Image 1: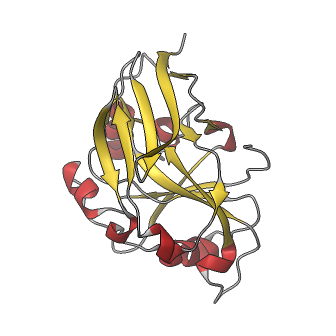
Image 2: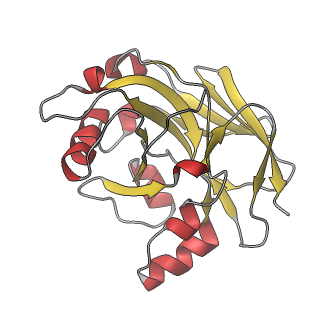
Length: 210
C-alpha cells in the first residue's frame, strides 16, 4: 500500500561508478533532490506511462527506505526506518542535461508523473542485514543494473542524518538512496523488473504517455 507518503527525498550520485559513467564529479556531501509524492506509484506488473516526446527516459534502480518517526539528532537509522522497498528513479535525461547547463532545478527531469514506481514495502531488517544481498534491475530479461549498499558513498546513517538535520524527517517520508552504475534508456514495450537476491519484487511494462 502506497498510502500516507509525504516527502520524497532522493540522493544523487551516491555510487561512485554511476557518477563516473555520466561524467559527473563525485560529491563530498549528499546531493539531495525531491520528487512530488504524486510521482510515486506501485510497481505491480502493469503498464507504466512515461513521457514519449521529451527525449530519452532513463531508469535508475534504487533502495528506498521509509521513515517511521520524527528525526532527532543521534537517532540510529535502525530506529528511524521501519520499512524498505526498491524503486526506479525515472529521469528525462535530455531534459536534465539542458537544465543542468542552465543551473535550473531538476524537477522537470525528475518529478513527472509515474517517475517513482516502487515495490511493496517490507519490514526493515536493519542496515547491516541489507549488506548481505544485491538488488538487480533487468530489462526484457537481461540484467542491466546490480547494486549493493556497501558501495554507497554515503551510508544510510549518513543520509538520514544529513536530510534530518537540513530538511527534517518524519513519519511517511521516504528516501530513494541512489543508483549503481548501468543506467540506460527505457523504450515503450520494455519490461523492467526489480529483484532482491534474485527474488522478483515488482515489474512494469513501459508505455508511451498520450
